[in-house]
Length: 237
Ligand code: PXP
Image (cartoon, rainbow, N blue to C red):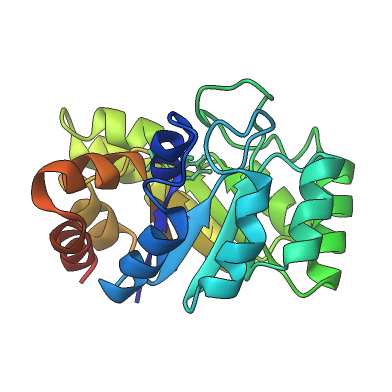
């Protein structure tokens, strides 16, 4: 089974644009779960333009599925995550003002840094996933650093899918075997949508989780949140 974790950053972005608590992030999280989502993801960035660090504890208390916090592990982020204790923390190599995540970790270059963060999070009982490109050497090093899972950066897959689905997925498929050989669980995320998700799931049946935000929230404008979540779950069956 591949779990659908809904990334709520865009809901927080709309809320923050007016300064009031509308839409209510907690209510949307609760509704996503009620409509069938098997996880909630947020990605607090240093400027808090999306989710705020103060959203984390209330979300943790409310979530009945899996709560995943993504982000760059500077000391501020680490302290917040360690205090909140989500089920999973996904470490992402984002620069502070980055528009959105657009590459995975260089686990060779940042090995000692990641090893330290992973050990601290795991000591607190938090499962750790590393955002990563489909590259065998980087995946093997992620396992050596102690990660429980990897999250494949699927931006390039989504970009190439309309032109050539098979070419778009081949590197991810090969890297899945490497990840499994290394004992890693496999997540995926970025730019996944109703068009490209089913093929990804068919080609990577080993996927543990997909985290999807932007396209899902855009679809919900037209289709409604409940219907949209059902459609994404359908693509994962
Ligand atoms: N995974 C990571 C690490 C991300 O940074 C994001 C975007 O916040 C996503 C998944 C979700 O990407 P999208 O919003 O394109 O679905």
